[in-house]
Length: 218
Image (cartoon, rainbow, N blue to C red):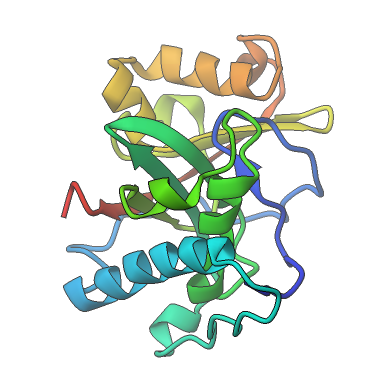
């Protein structure tokens, strides 16, 4: 599979990453009512993620490129997205783009391949595993500054940055692990390799929401 060079750094969900600081932004607003992505769009994106992985695994030096032109204007919007892979109910890889610098359709293909082959916590996905993967996508809103007291478990994902380090946790993580707000803030600091109380000592705290969908969750 041939993909153009990435315009956004891929970030493992368990890793910290460094980069340029975000410009000033308006406070995080209210969520839109109802899902943003239709059932057909969700199917298109999940199918694309599978196709990207399988295409990369197919043998032969002259494989045709997977078309990455977005089929609709909505899927051409610049969005951050994380692709999570599961095999037998266990995490098999999770990589994403935090910032909206890449068209969503292309970002899904790129992060699916990165999750399958570049997540350092796991061996690369093998061809006999590809058909058994379950894929979950988390499409992110742009990160916005937020006060620690305003963080809502189950609604917000968090991005914390300080001293050239960044850590990110998706909104579903504290729910799955039974964390309260303080633990969520501390664990986001830990992902950035920052002290657990960095959120109280000048680190930049940003929040985002995510529309999460996958083959197991519908």
